[in-house]
Image (cartoon, rainbow, N blue to C red; front, top):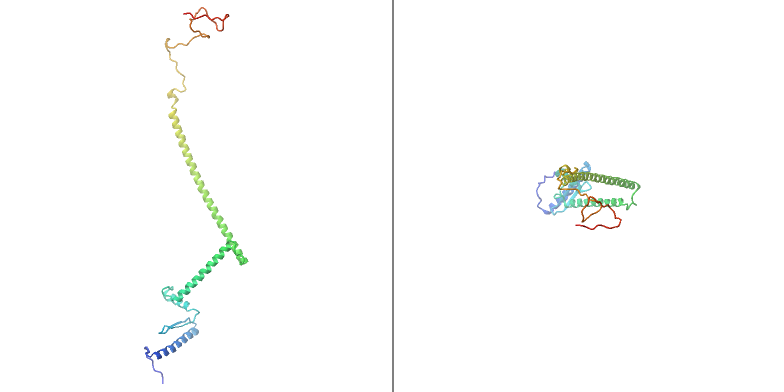
Length: 243
């Protein structure tokens, strides 16, 4: 006699419901396992009982990776608000470990560049460090040389501008000096500079040049007949003054 068809509805008897749940759960987990093995498929199965108890099966090594793959295929990149708490904690922990490893690597690299903790490095690592330092040194020297060239060019440009300004000021100063010279010293032809004085004829009574003897004679009249010679007389006697 064959089995009758079971009506699909909630089993009202609690004990029968629990027994049916256990049997069908085990069968479902078995079928999932067989499917993953026979067909080489990635299978993930999650079951929650009416009491909230979790039953799961995953053919891969991590249920989180399978769920992320599922989310990528259906919803794109996994979002934080739809991911589970375990996935978020695991992702945060992995990110923390990556950042920590990177920080430690950067610290070691910095110490090596400063010449510290070189003992654990191998010969190839030391050669790589040496090449890195040489490249950095060349870059620093090139940058410094370019900076000095730019600074020199700027100083030359400023020197040229200062020379041009100096020439302009010097030209203005010379022009101002010439104008002041013309104002202080007008044309000699206008004032008679460089000309001989012109003698105008004057009357006889205006000016006569003095005609006197070598000796000074004061108080007596000149006698045209007797001329007193210069020098002392024989008896050292001088004639008195007569009115």
